[in-house]
Image (tube, rainbow, N blue to C red; front, side):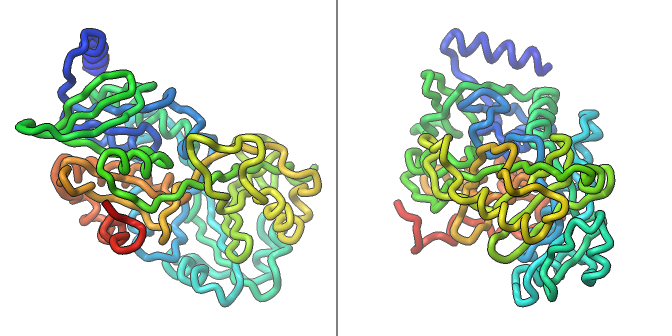
Length: 414
């Protein structure tokens, strides 16, 4: 069925014909791929369009690892994480892929940090004292300052293989009958008088007719939504760096995922997070949570990322000096992007205006959305197909926090 649909689509494209789909998803990162799968799994005729090659490294959904954690200061995220965990497991079972490696989660920070205390409380993590922390994981975190709060959730962390996860959902979408097209940059989404639905146009001159459209283009969201609807969404791309550091000789086993080393988050200045040694033997990923503003179409590939490496190096020298080598800098640097909203909350809403409920936007995931991809994708697909997200309501996910209207009177206008 999927192969026949793809062949028919290619033939129609070659002939300059019109495409008819129930849902057209623009952007094939984790959110769009999950949305296409969710739509196709319900029998919808779904089209997934990607402006670059599939599984490209130019956006925010590539690489070998992303963290999944329950520790969130804002109480509206843990229900979405729990929903996502269930959907990750369902997708792994359906596909036969393994993309999630479970791990504990360690959260540390200054005792007066309100965000830290809320995250610990919302996750149900257990506080540990200095002696307990020093006795765990080979004493890797002996450098945590005296008096700091430390909390461990034994089942609250995990590592997701990002690129493999995107491939998994794209494969499942195609298995369900979706059509997936790459190198198809969308330059227009329009309504036509007397015609239902929306028309999606690409830079190659193709036009696809869909009943509904879901926009999940990451760091390019502001540009596309502005050109399509004249709406300024305050979503600022940041140039982030993924940094891998050398584990000191003899410490490799202690920091490995198979030894139970945790995903971890260190609040304060700088805000640092990391994962167990997993995808690159002998190296461990420790990153600064942020980066300088950037234009997704004009990044500084050579010098972008600001002072992230030096910030993390200083953190390593204070917190993990016996286990990680910081003096020579990171061994591997990989570019990525965050798409930041002013409040770091997502945008999951109907575009409105002339488009009404025909266009749904999922964007502004602010550097912490990947883990919730399956949940977001399911919600976006339900909003497009049903006009509401029943799964979100059943899971206790409050979508009011993600409305576009919260920006009105601030940085948004027509």
